[in-house]
Length: 166
Image (cartoon, rainbow, N blue to C red):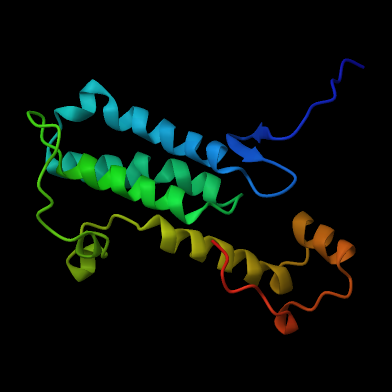
């Protein structure tokens, strides 16, 4: 039939799919894609406001797609935030810029006086919390059916979760 047997991990719709947790080296590939955008010559000569738009529309959107399918390591998310911060404050003449405002204030919503840049660690937890809420409320979803069939005796609300998950 022309179908080849493959090995994990595979890429599906741009996201890495594996049998277990995605290795950190593969998670970093997503961040490297974003780095390429930030290192692009055209992105060096844009204004501060343009950088904020680029961060919100592209740089933070690429990892969000992968975050919706996998659980990213804290280190990888911190590396990404560090690179975004340095990109935001870097001027075209200098390699490093001065961080004039704390990242906590920048990550606030525009209504609260920030720039509206989303913190990916918060986004990660929000995405996965939504998946947990889908389990009892969206019985028609294929992944809910799959987990329900696989773990028939699993009761989500009485399960003791690990507290040190990264």
